[in-house]
Image (cartoon, rainbow over all chains, first blue to last red; front, side, top):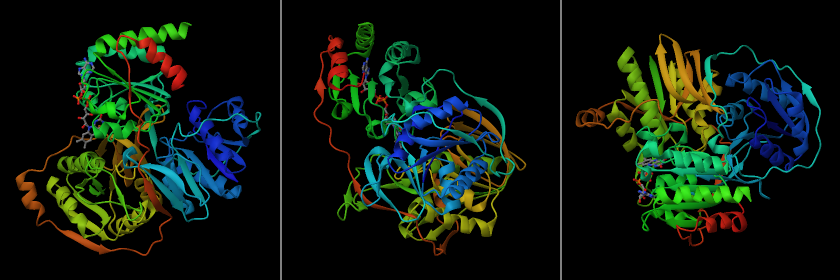
Length: 310
Length: 246
Ligand SMILES: Cc1cc2nc3c(=O)[nH]c(=O)nc-3n(C[C@H](O)[C@H](O)[C@H](O)COP(=O)(O)OP(=O)(O)OC[C@H]3O[C@@H](n4cnc5c(N)ncnc54)[C@H](O)[C@@H]3O)c2cc1C
């Protein structure tokens, strides 16, 4: 049995459907979640291959120790052999705790299904290389990098079963939570528009945001731009920022330093806009435009709008 | 406050990544090693700030061979009081976390800090594993940490936002950007580091759960297609029809 943990605190995200699709390719899938998501939303996981959804409405998931106990009890009650997480904040915190509790080897940031020998590919060296990981324990945990598999619909809504696991009392008290409305979380975004120091100042980001809105893309930036406070820290991509692998990455006024490339070279298609024909980013690009961002970006935005309208 | 900071050796960010022994080993030839930036910039410096404000002790720990002593001295030069090296290759995250937990159990720390991940394996595994083994609360991807007696106030990243939480020490916290500002060691620090205690302890017998069996470099990109900056309609058409991404 395959257990897929779903974070439903913001509704069901695309990465949840990816995890279910991934799990379905390994065997029969039970989905597990917690908190207040509506049963109709949860039942939709059946369309991607879950045979049922277990939900514990008594915990909200803010305490990693409680979440670990919930997942461990579901593993024990359903003779689970593989647990799948999305490699988001839960995959990065609860999956390692579960690994110790179950003595189950953990593959973090998986980008492939297990091969014939059971080895799974992961990104290593911040995206500069791939590694094949073999897990020797009987129970295995896989934390799947977003955008690594295309969600596949192949079933219908499934039953949702309420459960209550013995998860103890929380040791973490939440004082406040801030969730920006309407923004696409960067690691999940399929399209990303990113800009660097070539934009000269924060007041020039209007055209970047306009292009992002026209495309339905998330916005990102290079490290110096976040360091000097032109853009918020969570937009910083690269080796010491967020690593992303969208379908399309548009880099505007970014030189393409090795540390920047490390975080974005998993992107399927890269477009580079830069005034300097020698900018190293062109070597990593699929499409290159040598030109001034202040002219090219508004022109590109116009072309996108024309395309969307047609 | 007694603080343990876990540090790890990582290749310098400009290193050319290559593999040897039929792509089964990272090729260390010509590679300069540094303290993993998240461990150094955020976990270690915040630990030092907490000690400077309220007293206590900052110990660093790493699992590795004698070749790790250089990065340990660097961390001592930045200001840690003493260091522990568990003398063994770090076989996997589980093995590493169990070695550190076993040392921590004997020595009772109020706070264990790590970086949010290493820049070579990017696993984000060790901190959570230590917390689970010690059965203490874990806060991951923290961007702020304030200490008031034994109460910890932490700002952390959550799925789609930021959250401020409160908990009691002992705890394990993994540190990300925002925690602290990088410190450059000065001459006095470097001199002092030479004589600070570095305890080498024997490793416990623990089986690793995972293993990297081989590595590969990503496929080389095909040549870039240059597009006339006047003709953005062409780019949009290519993105739609050729690349099929919009
Ligand atoms: C340990 C370490 C970790 C690092 N981690 C990261 C990381 O995670 N992410 C990251 O991004 N960086 C990281 N860096 C920094 C990295 O080395 C580069 O300094 C940084 O990426 C450069 O940012 P940039 O491209 O925005 O700026 P610059 O290098 O200044 O490049 C600006 C570019 O804009 C172009 N330009 C100028 N004007 C225009 C215009 N009008 N129109 C179009 N183009 C224009 C220029 O030709 C140039 O190519 C790290 C560095 C170190 C040492």
